[in-house]
Image (cartoon, rainbow, N blue to C red; front, side, top):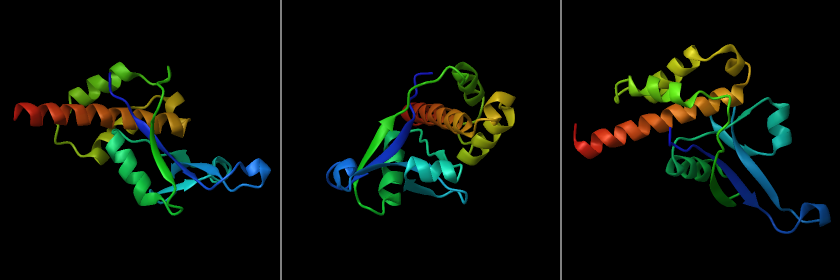
Length: 148
């Protein structure tokens, strides 16, 4: 699976906070209601939220711009792969789905197939769903390219 997923960070403020400045890097998290919001890691951990992951850099940037309240510098950052995610299995599952399958149906299928270790770690499950969506976007791009 060559697809890459992205997460979003926002930098806002001036000067190092350790020396009286107001600079802060916040990540984009998915809230309880499904919306995205930038917040500090401490706030997200207290609320037990998971980072927001996106299948394309464009989707990540757009979500970051939409969620920004501080109007800081938005960066869509690539996420490193982890060994716990079965990338080949995800690609096979997505490859056997119709390219017209909705994102919600695809995510529900991946969540339903997840092994117990992944369901106990919501962050891993969110990454797996984002990788599956990235593979789905690649398949949709092939269909559009070859006009199938």
